[in-house]
Length: 496
Image 1 (cartoon, helix red, strand yellow):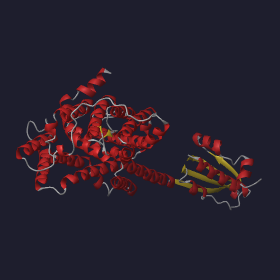
Image 2 (cartoon, rainbow, N blue to C red):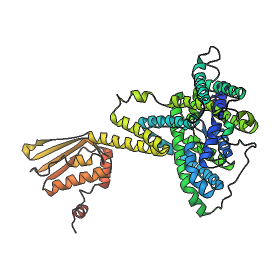
Image 3 (tube, helix red, strand yellow):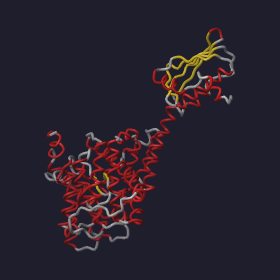
Image 4 (cartoon, rainbow, N blue to C red):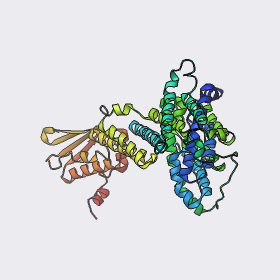
């Protein structure tokens, strides 16, 4: 226990502290922007980001991952806020937290093993594109100063690490923000700053119990939004955890992360914040800036609150161009460039899944829909591929009076039709032996097809013998097959 705490909190104090500060600076404009998307006051997003980051640092299952208010979640809140107001949003946030905790105890995070690598790659690429697209409003219809500042910021980010001595010690995104803020303050150039995004809060968050009637009607109002927030929040968090696992080459407890996200959202709802989840952009910033432990997430939340409440005058002077440069760096670093090169050597099905995930996610701006389409396509391609790995050969025996069919492969819903069409029911033989020793029956569809095969042969006056069923296949066949039940066969054949 003590060793784990030391590893998670104290093994990388300097790196975690500096990375947390960088993340906090990047969180401010995004939290404000996401609040505007959801149709609430900027402080709702800022308070949420503070609460979620601080709580998840203690309760989450993935050290070094950043959670806060997100755009994917904000998009789902628009209708509820418009129709019922902020109080219902806070109540929906509490319900979302409860549902996520339940999901954690039900170990629903284990379902992540059904998400293929091509879906994860598509998810990552789509997020990189969305992060870049989110910066375009700051780069259109602006003066040349913005382009110069953004280019200078990117130059600092990519070239500062080569400075001898301090290049590897201080995160280049932090240097970018500090330098460009100083230039902006001294030059007085007319470009957008954080202060132009919205009014920053000047007080600490206070405990707020949502002022909504505790009735069944209220529950039905909250439930659809809360379920969507739960699904999208956990999906984005699990995918981000997988990506951070790869970046840091360390494992994470995803079921604990589900519970942690739930506790964090309950905390946010009670302190006047909106629901949030893991943020891939900020998580990548954190890792690239040297953050590895829980301390970086905790520092990000605490510094965020200190800056917006006590240092608002300074924070409001940060030019948006500096933060745009940081986010462009994130989008470039997040995109899997290897996936473009791999298009030529990967199977077509893998490429289709990856590209479909990207297209749907970018087209709908909904991560859940994109991942769902990707998983569905991957499952269909897999079922088709496995279904085609089925061989059925036959040979005569006993001087032509018996035919032996040998089945090799997997028999399930995708291959059952092929299995059923492989037999010659009109051949005149006294006996048919179906050797299933190298086959496996997986589902009810396969068993029903086997029933039809046996019944058709018997209807033609042929005796049928099944041999070699493995234990698992025999179990499902014995339980659901009807070919040895005369009454059931008669009913199936339309008898009375």
